[in-house]
Image 1 (cartoon, rainbow, N blue to C red):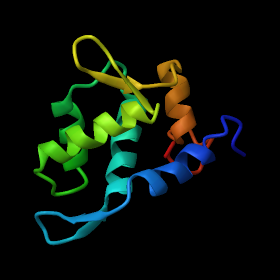
Image 2 (image 1 turned 180 degrees about the horizontal axis):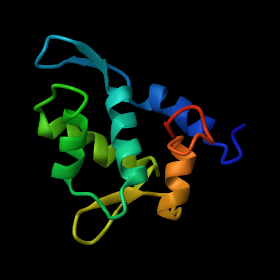
Image 3 (image 1 turned 120 degrees about the horizontal axis):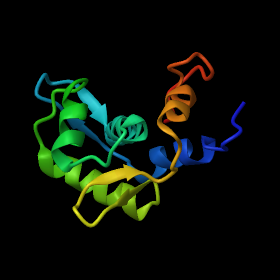
Image 4 (image 1 turned 45 degrees about the vertical axis):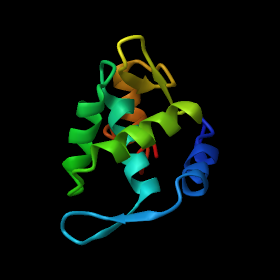
Length: 117
């Protein structure tokens, strides 16, 4: 069930964020996967997130030190209408859901079987 019709947005990530990179552990990671990590982080955050917050979130699952890549992906995610950037330069998920609903939507309460992206 995809009552929010986000499958379209999930599919677009693979199209718009092509390519891979090698992390510090010599593991190949797709740019679309990193974009998904950023989106999921921003979707459950209770406040807008800085570039450093997003970079730290990615670093919890991937050995990526390239901050410029995170900036590049954040810029693209704003242009593609996944995220919005506020006047302080922080990022938040475009859909404004109450925090508890975001968590349910992402599967933390067992309602959905996969993360938002």
